[in-house]
Image (cartoon, rainbow, N blue to C red; front, side, top):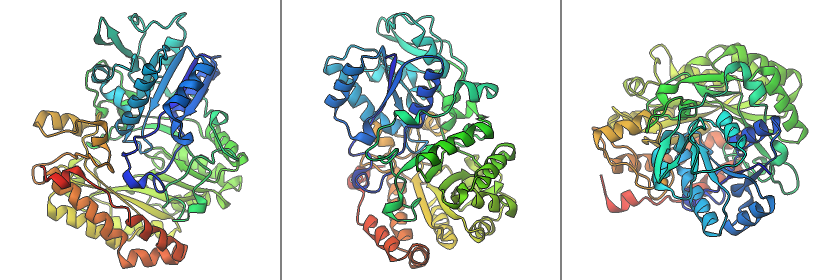
Length: 512
């Protein structure tokens, strides 16, 4: 065995009481992509999904001993595309435990946190032998091509950071897969390597809202991408960190804005595989699926023409200003996309522009949401409280807008200085308090420390967000809409979810 890809579990406290029933369990996208990429050039690979199988450290160690790989690669991305740092908590606990249990095989990490902070990751975590500084496709091949993987002598390996005489060294960067080689060097997903109970992908479950608040529709569940990266440079986002092509100690995602696509003819084959496996609930993970008509329109047409749209239950992300053409909405609906996740972020245009999501001057948000609803597509509306420029008044304006829009899905985060995002660097430069633990970056954890701004403390932002969550999901007009769409069971599931109260250290201690 050449390499085992490990998808680690989250810490038990990352999602608090939401973890048992409500948090999604997604297939490990990048483990699947990297595994298939390595197989395509002749390497023998395996995947251990610790999260899906709820494996203990001892069980992981036993499986690794049985497989006897040359390399262990932890693939550490969050199921939310901006939450890779949060997953480092469970990952580093496991990798240190493996070392303690006597595993001598080199341990590498790939993922958004180590891409953003490669030197700091090595300084903080002795259980990590080296890290990949971008998506790792070619640098992983560089490592596997070595006759012997010597973690103390990696001077000539492009695309890694490692330790030399105890000091962290960042090697010359490696390129990411170029557009013209996406179908070749990232040739799809190794679905066959995933664990399952009775049928493929039945250990994975969608968010409750994606299943229209019906538990029976959450599994089997899959997530895939038709593109990588994003063209935009939003202050709060670190999605583009996987594209980094420099040796900076602190990577900033806005420096690496790039979008690459698989061909529609290639991606439709992945849908064919999932349909054959009996998977109907699917997330399209692209940050901006409905952006480039050259790619999404022919793919949607092929999905529609195969008849998949009649039974698929999919959701996808989009900018709110790319979906105003009725014919686009009809095509999307005919392709089985039942939900669009839209980044509204703030009800205040000035705040939206300040974080560079931008250029909403000519967009009537209420009109666009109305058009989506008229097309028979539900909306997962995403908001952020505490953005630079936010005040109590602007946050209240955002909450009231969300209630007026009355979307079936509602998601709000406290603005977070996620490693890799421009806000992280801003936080360092301004001397704001940043989380001291990985879990402090989690939107749902007890230890959350969002980024304060000039008008609001971190405590005020968290308090507003948590109260807004309850207020929206208790709103009579929202509950009535859920009842009309899903029946009383959907309403009952929402009320049950509201019984889970998130605890926050910052609120208990009354900090800044």
